[in-house]
Amino acid sequence: MFVQLEDAECARNSAIKARQMAEADLAEITTTLEEVQKAKSDAEEKAATYARERTQLQSQLDENEEELAEVRLFFPSSRLYSYLVH
Image 1: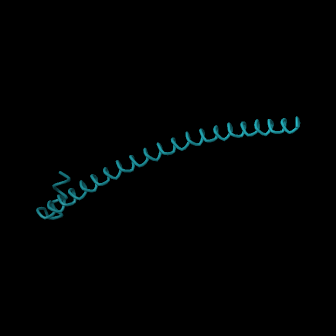
Image 2: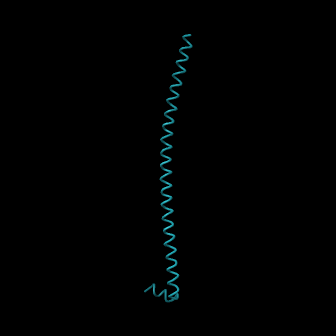
Image 3: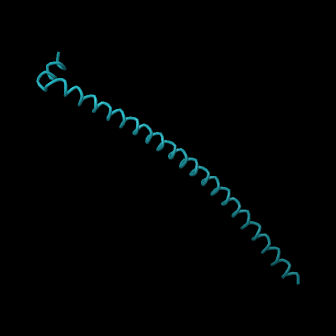
């Protein structure tokens, strides 16, 4: 009976230690998950910002191309070149 009690206590202690280790692992994984989620959120925010900037730059480029097309209508290429150079 005494041996069985010792075995049960040993098993209990082992289970407690295993639970503590599992809880520590869970805490570490939770922290890592939070860091990854924050990094993902930051990356998504940057991507959205870059997408907005790209759209703005594309709009500006389109406007510049339209303006250039209008200028080319008013100035033949030889006059345009000398106008831009001087």
